[in-house]
Amino acid sequence: MDDPLQSSNTLKRLEEAEQLKLMGQHKEALEMLEQLLIEDPSNISALEEVADNELSMENFDRAKTAALQAIGLDNKSYTGYYILGFLHSQQNNWSEALAQLQKANALKPNNSEILRCLGWALFRNGQRTQGVVTLERSLNLDMDNPLTLCDLGVAYLQTKNFSKAKMLFTRTLDLDPGNSRAHKCVQAMEKLERSIRVQKKVKK
Image (cartoon, rainbow, N blue to C red; front, side, top):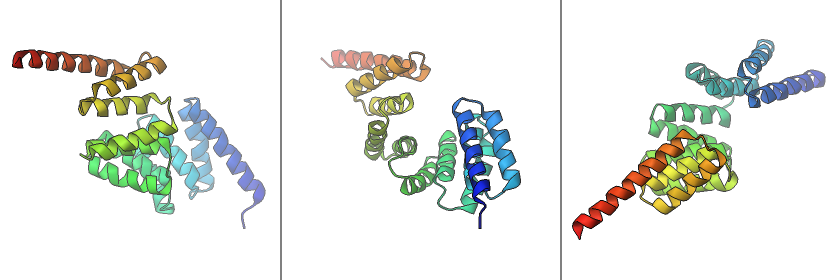
């Protein structure tokens, strides 16, 4: 039987590590989490947090190792599947990303970040309508997320729905004025619109 005091102490340290992660102090968070894993190598929450911190630091191999360990200990680790899906997305392995993100979504429905990554993977995997719908669901859950706004904007840009794309990029830049991806997309959209106008004039 678990010692309640020990469990309480572990929970407190996990919460402290979470706070460090949210403040961007990933190395400090990892030190705390690694100590927890020395004491209890089967601590799934600690492994998931290690994977998430390593992902934030772009230590992709280490993030993958920790995610696989978490799934090995608990095949219902939605965080583990999400991280694997995200890593496959980074490498443009869209079918594999989709498989992992669908597992994460089945285990943790209505999570805006999982839905964002799933929507983008669906879109890039050729399931464009489903991808847009999924990204819209993600945005409904987290209306002010620049990443989701930008992903959805790109999806609408690629499907030539310029008015929606423009609205989403404008909203992204309102929230995050220095967002380089949104600026590039606005420039690309303006160039595309000019090109379409020229083609229409030529046809006349």
